[in-house]
Structures are given as C-alpha cells and as structure tokens.
Length: 454
Image (cartoon, rainbow, N blue to C red):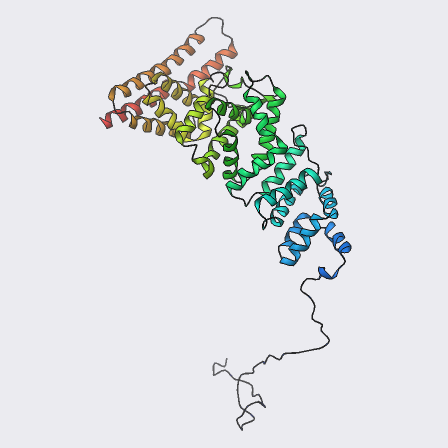
C-alpha cells in the first residue's frame, strides 16, 4: 500500500498570470452567472394572476388546515384568504366544512375553523375580532345557543377553544360578556338565584350546566382560561350561591338531571370503589377547585382560605354530605386542601369532626399506601398548628373513640342471630379493613409526634 504524499493532477491554468502553463494546483470550480432572456421574471404570488372566481373554487376544495397553512406563508396569501372568507363563497365554504357526515364526524372541522379564524383575525382589534366571529357563528352558520340544541353548544365550544387559545385572560373575560348577548348565561344564572329550592327548574338547571360546560370549560385547553371563565360567573356572588353553582356545574348527574341528593344518601359499602358517575363528579369538582389557582385573573379572589370556605359551603349543598363522600372529594382535590381542612378543625377545636374525617379518610383510602401517607402528612401539619398539649390529647382521644366505635358496631352486627351468610361475609370484610392495626397505626403516629414535640 502506497503511503506517500497525496498526488494531484496537473491542470492547465489558462487564467494564471504565471508563465508556467503546467502548474500543479487544486481544481477550482468558478461560479458563472447565466443571464438568459428565455426565463421570464414572475411574481411571487401566482394566485393574484387568477380570476377571483377560479381562485375561490380552488379554496373551496381545501380544508381549513390547508387554508391556515397557506395564509401563514406570506402577507399576500393572508389578504387573499381573508377576502375569500368574507365573501359569499366563504359563507358557502363554512357551511360545507361543518356538515356532519359519517366520515367527517370526528375530523376536527370546528377546531380547524377556530384555528383558522384565530389566525385571520389576529391583527385586528379585540372588538373587531369578536364581531367577525359572532357574524360567522350566529349569522352565517346560524348556531342556536339558547340551550335547546346541545350540538350547537358543543360546536361553539370547540370553535371557541381554538379561536381564543392565544388570547390573554383579560380578553377572555371581555369576550364572555360579548358572547353572553347570544347565550344569555348570566340571565339564566340570575333566574336560578331566585329559585327557593333546587331541583325544581330542571330544564333551567340543565341549560346552565350545558352552556357553561360545553362552551366555557370542557373545550378550553388552557387551565388559566378555564379558571378565568369560572371566576367570571362566581365573582361577587354570595358564598352559598357560589357553592350551589359549583354543585350545579360539576356535581353528579342522574337521568340527564343534576342529582342533588347523591352525597346525602347512605352507601351500603364504602370499602368498594365508587362507580363511574360518582368518580366523574369528584374529578369535575376537583378540577373546578384546581383551575381557580391556575388563573392570574382568579387568584386575587381565591386564596386557600376562600377555597376552604367554598368547600365548607359546598359539602352542605343542599343538605350536609356524608363524611365518607367528603373524604373521597378531598383525596381528588389534593393534599393542600385536605391539610387546610384538618388545620381548620384543629384550630377551631372541632376535635370530634376532626376524628370523624380522619376515620373516613382511612376508610376510603382502601389500604392504598399513597393515600395513608397523605393522611399522615396532613395530620402532622395540623399538629404543628396545635400549640397546646391539651388540644393534641383531645384529638387523639377522639380518634381512638372513632375507630373503636365502628369496630364495636360491626362486631355487634356479627353477633346477631338473624344475620345471613352473605351479610356475615360482608361485615367480616369490613372488620378486616377496620382492624386494630389501623387504629394502632394512627394512634402510634400521633402519640410519637406528641412525644417528640414535647
């Protein structure tokens, strides 16, 4: 193998000023500008050379996503597509896009239209933007948003969520007031406020819930926007009515109406997991509490104390909830709210309620380690606020009594002569879940914490 120096070809350099015609050098490629009169200079945008009718027919065959991409390429394309959407051909295009057919039902046409209109109106003032959207939705597409058509509310929400995705919370709040001239949500809420009892105006309650959830909550992607819109309807309302509205909007449903008595009924067995409808209600209520913390617009009115007050009113709507349902909701809402509830009970000397809540939390934890850790941390945080030893001793006594009381009740049922085999197995499972280990565990943690502090 030859490992010598690299060899170069001898190239005759006619452009060199040196006399040697056979100079060895690297071959260089020189760029030559070719100016041919056969290549005409064309405009950048070819669409401006087409007749308007032909151009509109081309746009009519494109999807909203394609128009969005095309409008994003240049200012000239942006202007052409904006004029197309404002024309009568644009109205026909909107109606053809949103037609529901089996192959287009899940195509996301409303989201794509919302994204397209969000781009086309991004350079306009806010009032002009809202006016264009109201004209497109209520005049061109003839959406009915008084609550009689749930499909129209659902379509409006999907459009609204994408259209306002890049907006600020101030713009979102102002848009709510402008859209309410068609939706009449505020007027419906005022009518609901005047109702003496819940569950009477079933149609009104259904319209309020559907309008807010479909348009202003479920289709909104940003949590900050959800919290802002929820705060708009809760703002300056009495605390009891805020809690009632929260239950109306996010509470459990049964047979297409709000189940106002769901959390006041006795459940046969709290050791089994809740059904899908009940879990959905816990999830929705916890989302409502959490989004209030995500919005800058809502944080001024909703701190930890105000949310705790709202929870206390909520679990009394329309009548006080069972403690086990409250415990389920607190696990969904998170450790912060759960800890604040225990701290409030401890500071106000509501020791019996404190013990009942901890007992219910242990029941609905269903032997899940992560839930027991949340309970332990919440108890420790609440004990840090109790500066008096007598308060801690009182809480420990009530906790021990709460666990012993339920155990005695189960044993008494098992000792009865009329118990069936099925009920006997059921109560034996309860006794196993409520055995002395749980009571000993909680008592040990509290006693050791008390000894360490003192």
